[in-house]
Length: 507
Image (cartoon, rainbow, N blue to C red; front, top):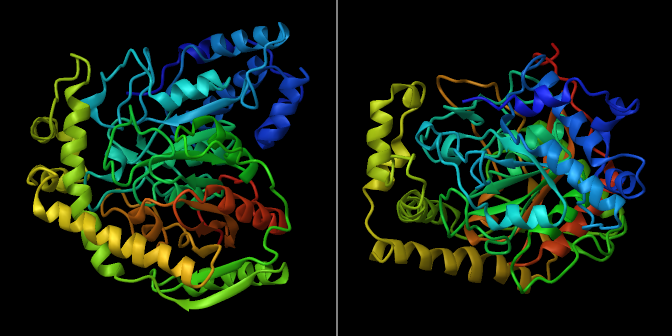
């Protein structure tokens, strides 16, 4: 399955605005201002991104970030232009094109596939709540982004950004390097200027890792802050949808539109300034993996910037029981995947013939293309699990509650009066290896992911041509605080630069 060309054939004959070459670098605030004062229309912006997708995703470097285009995107844009002309302004996202990960339910005619052949006919009549919220806020759903198949919960040896239906997504900075995953296409689309904004999902690392590898900002919200309804699941315990953008402000604007938790009636764009580190206590977390010296050097400069701008850096604080939590996490994900995916599959349309995990395993066995490169080990292991009422599952959940939350992040923050933890987000992107899978060595996503707490990654610098990110994480519902810190870091460092689509690393 490849993206529909219906929208492309419609717009290719249309003249783009003379200033369109500069639109790829447009910030969310700039786009918002131009549309509101009518110096740029939603239709022109949508036309630009459709052409950009044709130039960079379907040809040229062939980034393979977009799996499906919305054939109604231009029609939606024209409707929003007409509304604005009539004096109806839906808000900050009015007329802004957004790409969403292809595990989030959109309505017909777009399918929601998770990159899997078994879901190629999964066309819903009702979109996920977060899609409805985006549309109500005036966003244009431009299309669906490729992803690691089943959000990277299929095989232990897969290649991030690869799916049976979408193929392999590429990193726009160095094309033979991984985009990370599982929200690979979402991150690449934003980084390469194929869309202004994107939505990804994360269970553990799937927003922050691809965001860091592709030089963009990614926010993984507190579990429950954004509705998980209508999203192909891995785990209700850890799954969270969140925004991806070229800037912290853009990500904050997008988060505003998709929040559903009544505990958080807040505008995440308020109070953002470059002085937010003053008087803040920031902890460097240790024992999160062996980041190479090149990453440590860039991270040290980031820490020095925070110190120079008034932050107090606290070192030597260890999060407890990381190894035990890693084992508990895997147990929880396996149990949840069986429980949650069975519930999702049972409600898919009649054309989807796979209605539970066992049928999915059989389907993949009967369709060799689905396991051409990677097995389905994790799916098979999940199928062996019992119900989430079993003692082993409850024991794992109790361990997470105790050591990830109560005696972990919560206790350390309270005892040391911390504002946030920081750590490098990623190692330099490894070479794509479709045969052996990812060469993954270090990450900082797990403490916040296992706890269900928020984290945000922002560009930190580069190792050669490869982007590196820095992560900020803290207690539940601390998004506003973390966004302020990330914004200050972004403004003080201006570390992001646009990708140049290099074929390989410069010798």
